[in-house]
Image (tube, rainbow, N blue to C red; front, side):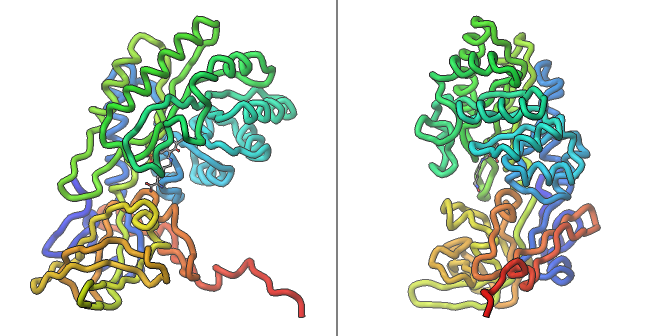
Length: 420
Ligand code: LLP
């Protein structure tokens, strides 16, 4: 069920019309649905709870997908843990009320300061991505008089068959340690005084619509777990990363969480390991949209443009990955339908949110750019000195501003001219 729907000809988020949101908070604005966020997490929790292996599993929401405090706080209240990739994300989840014992720390370039802070907070696990990182963590933990729990992020060399910029599990990727190096590195870790081997981790890519590569990756990981056991190293948890895709286009079918997870959980039966997951997009992607207004129509001979007040700085995905987002009018009108390139005011040819979209619109109309809850605001920039959009969360018939629109003055507040 979508939490964004047409009621009396007007698109609503839950019970609130997007027209009302635009009047109250202006555009562009990110609009999230609390019920949609809750339902997305519940889909994971329900599948896990229904499976004997799933009990005690830890769902660590990948903060990078959408790091607004209200989103993090909602997930924390619902029992989720978090997958972080920076000291900044650590501070965010702590500020949002997360339980640090449910936090995993991923990423290839953790600094000593970030490691120290995470140790101090008492996180669940560091996902280690290189031999050098292991040595640094051992040193930092030693200086702090602590033992750091670790997993290695192992690269299973599986093709996730997704966009190359968001594939991570292939040999060529900068992520993870090579499969063939894993045994030696685990032995090294087991011998280090300030490291505690806790688990094993993999993340093969993002926006996977076919669950098969996840199964392939798990098979490779389990073979390694057996080798490790034979050499006396016990793995307590298996972190399967994130990556489950969502429907971006009307008519597209997204795999259910059950069809993705159950085959994986079946394979883990009898192994006595805890399951950890790091879903990002799947928890937030279809729980948000970008609300924008048409500034001008520019009909042309070759192409017609709808110039909107949102741009590539607000939603980078189309420019960066040629990603598709459905673009729907908030109020349907009848009249001539034309194919528009829906573009922003930024001075780049790549500044489009959609191309050749059949729309019946006029200047001043509101448009909803759908499926924008993941990697939308989180990747927004201030390019062209554009303040970042407001973010609001709808809960039933109520709307809460969860991040106010930036002001222009804030954008250069930290800058300084040279002395005269
Ligand atoms: N765990 C790790 C280690 C990751 O690197 C990622 C995403 C996730 C979990 C969450 O993956 P998800 O469940 O969201 O697929 N900006 C791109 C996506 C980049 C994904 C980066 N890593 C996009 O807009 O499509």
